[in-house]
Image 1 (cartoon, rainbow, N blue to C red):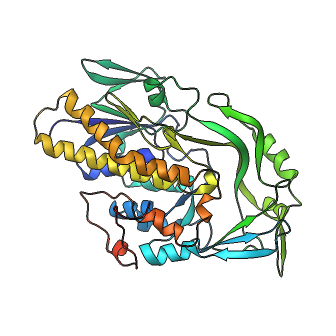
Image 2 (cartoon, rainbow, N blue to C red; image 1 turned 180 degrees about the vertical axis):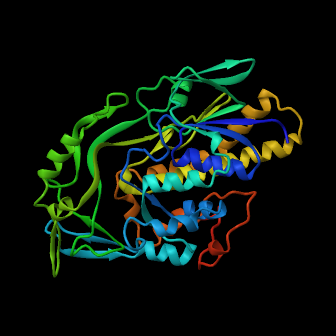
Length: 398
């Protein structure tokens, strides 16, 4: 195999999943994470759907995650309620998706997910913390990554998995209008509350008391509003009387807030970048396709994307058969990856736009967006993924 090194900028879900994929392909890599420790990432929770679960299962990681639900059970149904918390109807799309694909949908605490992904990287010296990337330059045709601490790292390609404020993407395009925000929302994890059934997503109507509010105008990066813990507290305290459920037991938002574990008030950012690659730089995840948190599809998009990128790099290594690769070989490989992956990622991004889209279109809609998923082509298909009633098939679904 040719001497080839991948620099991964960002130790989030995309970066660490890609590292695990490359490890199985015997492709050298280094992860540069700006925070002082893996797992110190902003965000209360992360949803893992069947496509991401299957890829993590291929990597030998998913069984370790299954015991780490935020609740006591995976998601089964979405329950729709009116402004007074009264039951309207129920969609069992999540339970149907599990029966069809073999994998459930569930929410996890982000730090634990990242720490689990990190645990399965055999050579921990390949994951460097306190390495905040500030610039990328070229020397003798190879990208050189410069960090704020003065250190440098060189490789054959740079993969930007460093989120919406991606340093790698900024090196490709001086963008101000890729990312937009029209809403702000409160996202949190709380302890259990009587009246809120485990395993159900509760969707409650109510414009004036909603936990997602429309902003005064559309904002563009880098001028999207940011909020403090005090902002979040004041926002939440204005919603305490909001009725969530009023069946046999009444539950209000204030009941959840009393059992708060972690929360954040954030602008709801959305965006779908049209170009992901430039030379030997390529971006993935929120840096090029950002969806709203409540859509729950972000982890699926980035996990599929890095698996696809690893597939293309593995094919490039097999093609080289130990010979040196030209710049044209490498750049063509990245362009092929983008051409292959862009349509599905854009479709899923549009599907998740606006928050409620994942719950529309009938119960079968959930599975339709799952079955066309990517997988790691050079690793075995897990038996679990062929035990359902609707097999994964990239020629079907969305």
